[in-house]
Image (cartoon, rainbow, N blue to C red; front, side):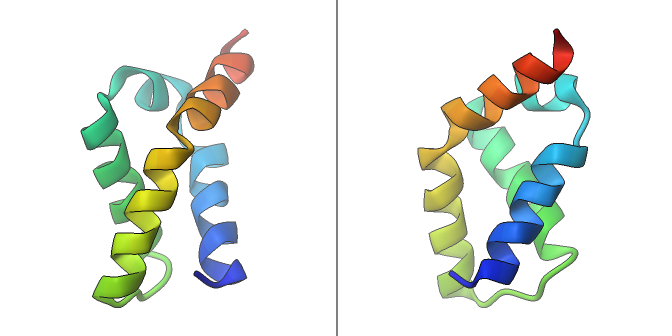
Length: 71
């Protein structure tokens, strides 16, 4: 995964409404973040698979960040 893709993903996370990040279940949140990221960066199927795995492994961090913004 390229730094550009990672930057785009975390930009999406930072600009997404807190309630979206907190209310979606794991699968829906991964799919939603991938969709939002791929609207900004063109990815091939291998990169999308890797991005899904990366997001899945960071869901706790993503939700912790959203929760902190909410407080």
